[in-house]
Image: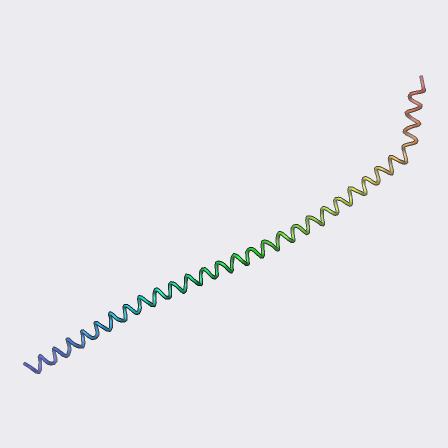
Length: 110
Protein backbone atom coordinates (compact mmCIF):
# COMPACT_ATOMS: atom_id res chain seq x y z
CA UNK A 1 0.00 0.00 0.00
CA UNK A 2 2.88 2.30 0.53
CA UNK A 3 3.80 2.06 -3.12
CA UNK A 4 0.20 2.86 -4.14
CA UNK A 5 0.10 5.64 -1.55
CA UNK A 6 3.32 7.05 -2.93
CA UNK A 7 1.93 6.98 -6.45
CA UNK A 8 -1.28 8.68 -5.27
CA UNK A 9 0.74 11.28 -3.39
CA UNK A 10 2.83 11.86 -6.53
CA UNK A 11 -0.33 12.27 -8.63
CA UNK A 12 -1.85 14.63 -6.06
CA UNK A 13 1.35 16.68 -6.00
CA UNK A 14 1.42 16.74 -9.79
CA UNK A 15 -2.22 17.82 -9.94
CA UNK A 16 -1.61 20.44 -7.27
CA UNK A 17 1.36 21.77 -9.26
CA UNK A 18 -0.76 21.75 -12.42
CA UNK A 19 -3.53 23.64 -10.62
CA UNK A 20 -0.97 26.17 -9.40
CA UNK A 21 0.39 26.55 -12.94
CA UNK A 22 -3.15 27.04 -14.30
CA UNK A 23 -3.86 29.70 -11.65
CA UNK A 24 -0.60 31.44 -12.54
CA UNK A 25 -1.45 31.30 -16.24
CA UNK A 26 -4.92 32.71 -15.54
CA UNK A 27 -3.37 35.63 -13.64
CA UNK A 28 -0.94 36.26 -16.49
CA UNK A 29 -3.78 36.01 -18.99
CA UNK A 30 -5.85 38.55 -17.05
CA UNK A 31 -2.85 40.88 -16.92
CA UNK A 32 -2.28 40.48 -20.66
CA UNK A 33 -5.97 41.23 -21.33
CA UNK A 34 -5.69 44.43 -19.30
CA UNK A 35 -2.53 45.46 -21.16
CA UNK A 36 -4.14 44.69 -24.52
CA UNK A 37 -7.25 46.69 -23.61
CA UNK A 38 -5.08 49.58 -22.47
CA UNK A 39 -3.04 49.53 -25.69
CA UNK A 40 -6.20 49.28 -27.79
CA UNK A 41 -7.73 52.28 -25.99
CA UNK A 42 -4.54 54.31 -26.48
CA UNK A 43 -4.55 53.44 -30.17
CA UNK A 44 -8.21 54.41 -30.45
CA UNK A 45 -7.48 57.73 -28.74
CA UNK A 46 -4.52 58.37 -31.07
CA UNK A 47 -6.59 57.55 -34.15
CA UNK A 48 -9.41 59.79 -32.95
CA UNK A 49 -6.96 62.67 -32.46
CA UNK A 50 -5.44 62.14 -35.91
CA UNK A 51 -8.92 61.95 -37.44
CA UNK A 52 -9.87 65.24 -35.77
CA UNK A 53 -6.67 66.88 -37.04
CA UNK A 54 -7.29 65.64 -40.60
CA UNK A 55 -10.93 66.78 -40.46
CA UNK A 56 -9.89 70.21 -39.15
CA UNK A 57 -7.31 70.65 -41.90
CA UNK A 58 -9.82 69.56 -44.54
CA UNK A 59 -12.40 71.98 -43.14
CA UNK A 60 -9.83 74.79 -43.21
CA UNK A 61 -9.01 73.97 -46.84
CA UNK A 62 -12.68 73.97 -47.79
CA UNK A 63 -13.27 77.28 -46.00
CA UNK A 64 -10.20 78.83 -47.60
CA UNK A 65 -11.25 77.65 -51.06
CA UNK A 66 -14.80 78.90 -50.54
CA UNK A 67 -13.52 82.25 -49.32
CA UNK A 68 -11.28 82.64 -52.38
CA UNK A 69 -14.16 81.78 -54.71
CA UNK A 70 -16.46 84.21 -52.91
CA UNK A 71 -13.87 86.99 -53.08
CA UNK A 72 -13.34 86.33 -56.78
CA UNK A 73 -17.08 86.41 -57.44
CA UNK A 74 -17.41 89.57 -55.37
CA UNK A 75 -14.72 91.27 -57.46
CA UNK A 76 -16.53 90.27 -60.67
CA UNK A 77 -19.82 91.64 -59.36
CA UNK A 78 -18.13 94.85 -58.22
CA UNK A 79 -16.47 95.28 -61.62
CA UNK A 80 -19.79 94.78 -63.43
CA UNK A 81 -21.42 97.30 -61.08
CA UNK A 82 -18.69 99.85 -61.80
CA UNK A 83 -19.09 99.28 -65.55
CA UNK A 84 -22.86 99.80 -65.34
CA UNK A 85 -22.39 102.92 -63.22
CA UNK A 86 -19.96 104.29 -65.80
CA UNK A 87 -22.46 103.56 -68.58
CA UNK A 88 -25.25 105.30 -66.64
CA UNK A 89 -23.02 108.33 -65.98
CA UNK A 90 -22.09 108.52 -69.68
CA UNK A 91 -25.76 108.26 -70.63
CA UNK A 92 -26.65 111.04 -68.20
CA UNK A 93 -23.84 113.26 -69.51
CA UNK A 94 -24.73 112.64 -73.16
CA UNK A 95 -28.43 113.39 -72.63
CA UNK A 96 -28.10 116.19 -70.07
CA UNK A 97 -28.23 119.06 -72.58
CA UNK A 98 -31.23 117.52 -74.32
CA UNK A 99 -33.01 117.04 -70.99
CA UNK A 100 -32.35 120.66 -69.99
CA UNK A 101 -33.60 121.89 -73.37
CA UNK A 102 -36.77 119.79 -73.03
CA UNK A 103 -37.37 121.09 -69.50
CA UNK A 104 -36.85 124.74 -70.52
CA UNK A 105 -39.15 124.27 -73.54
CA UNK A 106 -41.85 122.76 -71.34
CA UNK A 107 -41.65 125.63 -68.90
CA UNK A 108 -41.55 128.41 -71.54
CA UNK A 109 -44.32 127.09 -73.74
CA UNK A 110 -47.76 128.30 -72.75
